[in-house]
Length: 233
Image 1 (cartoon, rainbow, N blue to C red):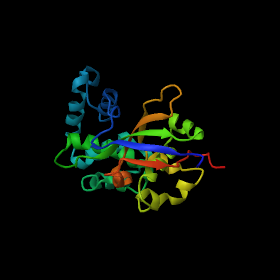
Image 2: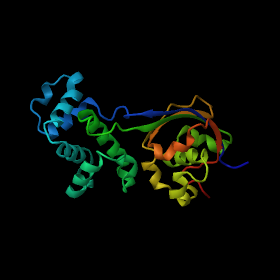
Image 3: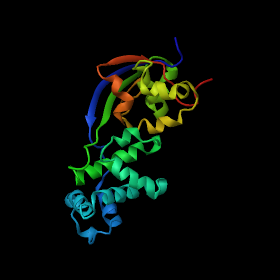
Image 4: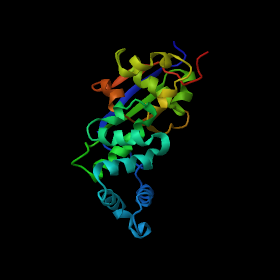
């Protein structure tokens, strides 16, 4: 038997339109300060999202998009890139298509805010939320189930799809290597719901873009031989 082996059950694969606890009340306040909205502290918490949307509509659509890009991404984009993206965000699923993989998640969060403020100009962004149960089938596998990482989870998901999957086509070498840095930008966020004492099972919720997991539609169970970075001998 392989050193690392798991049974995987896909409990949920669902379209969602935001990631919880990203656009928080505090984040809306910070955005309002950023666009120099007055008396931000006096706005009740339950009105912050609406007020942030209203504040953005004081700008032209593309100018508002540049503001949100600058707020969320800062100097990781230059002025010209922000201006180009302000246009592309109105037409493309840029959170799936932008050349810099490390910006995909932030571009999704930007798209959420712009859709809320300008629903006629920006498409509603959509991503995938997966919930899966991992069970270790060997003693060595238990640590990865109890303490999953992005690299490990990306390999687990890839094992559920065929060799033509986008992950496999783009990152075939990293999947088999001892380091998979790109995985941090494939698995945007995940939450492990915890193992019981002496348990070999964990339920994990993952947020990622559809282009990575589209091929898991219709699949409910598979076995995986995934490993975490640094575990190859």
